[in-house]
Image (cartoon, rainbow, N blue to C red; front, side, top):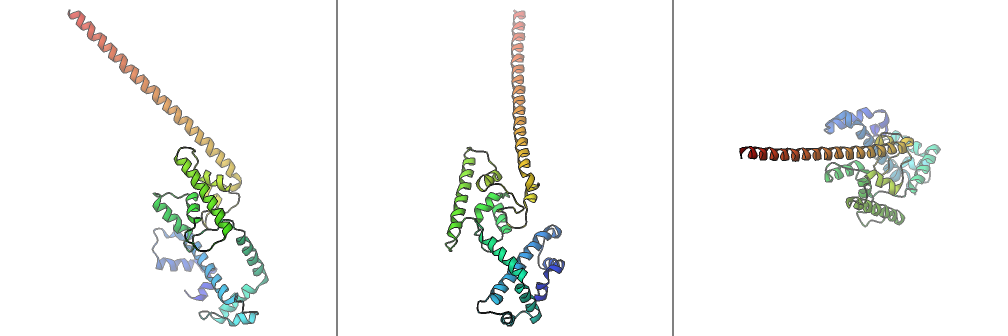
Length: 272
């Protein structure tokens, strides 16, 4: 794919998807379009970020003119000037600064490395017979896999959260609680209050996950609890009715046995 296509990605996303279809095989192209294009967007941003870090943010470059001269070999002067002008814009600088500050406030960074969350979820489903909850994703992505240096405070936070989740799941397996994975998640990390769905990876909102807006999430969960209790009562009533039916069948059989025994004794008496 040429660098010109790379720079004008947003205006030709349809062309990019056609390019993917030529190179890859999809079971349902239209169904996969959204996830494929979102992944392409992330690749686009990552590639542009690497360009900026290597050719624009070099501490030896002090002026815009020096950065313009520090052009990557695979780009034309027009293409490189477009990016330098964009990165030098004051509005972009302010937006970039806010984004950096937001990333610095992350309390629980993941340890996935270059592995995508979609690939991680797929691996979990393969191990868990097709099942994968947010708890599974959080434990897998926040468990340190190497001795590579990381933020100590973030590591401590991740370790505490993972240990608490594992403890609640073990208690559930032992029959000490009946919490679902979602309830365990909220007990440990609190309720979801914004549009971003935590511990799942990009591409899914709270509304998409719970099928309800965040502002109505509490009401939705209350309804789920009420329905759960109602189902339990219905199941108990069904079991009671089944037990009563079995008792009636048993009593009927005992009565028939007694009647048969009496009839047999009457026949024997008549014979005598």
